[in-house]
Amino acid sequence: MKEEKQKIGEVRKKEIREAAKACFLNKGFQNTTMEDVITEIGMSRGGVYHHYSSTTEMLKDLMLDGNEYRNTLINEYLANNKDKDKNQQMADILVSKALAETDLMKLYSHLLQAKNYNQDLEILYQELKNHTTKELALVASQLGIMNDIFSDGFLVNYINGLILGSEVLSARKSFDSHKKYIKETILNYIIDLEIK
Image (cartoon, rainbow, N blue to C red):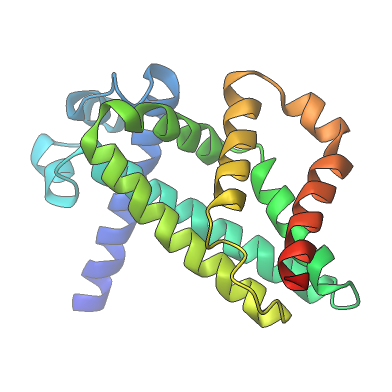
């Protein structure tokens, strides 16, 4: 009985997140209120507040959903590319992440833009950055890359710059057509760290 209730609760939370995602994409995160999400989902106010007390909590869970999805893609990639050089694999993974075209990536770019004006979002960004960096560092370690390629923040900032450029400057098509140069930059950076 308790397990069934938990499953139902998770389904409800997912439905709320999907409604929130629609609102965020339509109105922007900063302009979306809890009332907007309640209206979008058609659930009672108490039902929504039972699961989430703020839109920031919803955004956090959406970003964690995105990380989970990305981890699935990384695992599939690794399983299918065992014959590739470790540095090539890591560069492929990072380029794929940077140039992913998903609703959650659009939301992430909203977060990157809004965090400078909202302390809660800055805290959320730092938390997500630490979480994602640890996960990617683990992948690098599993590949046999011994140096901490994320320690100085370059790769995180480079990837975030590409995400913002793709979403805000509509540069995705340009980035996609010049993907090899982006990959070369990442690859050269990783190799240079290994030489040091």
